[in-house]
Length: 287
Image: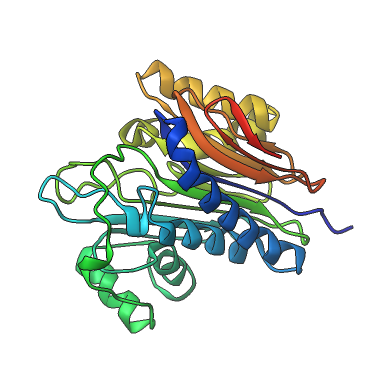
C-alpha cells in the first residue's frame, strides 16, 4: 500500500524577531509548496527536498545560498548535504564559494561522484563538470547578522521513501575553511527508510560531537522510541553539552517532529493528512 506523503522544512534556529517574519514566512511557504507539489505529483522524496532547499537557498533571507553570512575574511563558504533513505546513499559539498545551489552539487556528488564529500575548489570543479551553475561572488547578499539560518528539508514520498537535505553558510565570522555539521552524514543530515529523515540547525560543532541526526534514527531503531521522543532526547544530549538549536524529522509513517531548544526556529510542514503550518518561535503564524 502506498504511503501518504509528508514534508517539513526549516530556516534555522536562534533568536527570531517577529518583524523579520514578513520576509522569511513567504520564503518558507514557497519552499514548502515547491517540495510538496513534487510529492503530490508522485515525485520522489529526493526531488522534493532538493527543490525545497534550493528555493530556500535562492531566497536570500536565510544563512544559506544567496543570503549566506561571510567568514572571518569576509568571504562566502557554503556547505550542503543530502541523503537518500532508500539506499543510504549520501553526498555533500563543503567550503564552496561559487556554486549557486550547493544542495544541487551535493546531490550530484551522491548520484554521480566516486566519493561522499567534496570540498573547496575540487567540489566547484566537479560541479562545473556536472553542468551546475557557477556564479560570481557578487551574487551573494553577504548577510552579516545571521548567526543561524541554516536551511533544510525532510520528506516522505508516496512510495514510502525518505530523504533529507541541509544547506548553510555556517557561523558568521567563522575561521576560513571551517566545516560544520550540515554536509556531514549523521550530524546535520540523515535518512533511513527503516527509521526517519532528519535535518538539523544550530551549534554545528556540538551537533557533530553528538552525531545528532543519526542519534534520532538510532534511538528509533534500537530503542524503539517514537519520532517525537527520539528527537527530543537527541536534542537534550546536545543541550547537555551546552548546545542550542533544533531539528526537523519525518518517520516512515509520515509523522513529523520539529523540536528546538533555542529561542525560536523557522519551520513549516505539510503532514500526511495534508495539514499545513508555518511557525516561528512558539507562535503559530499560518495554518
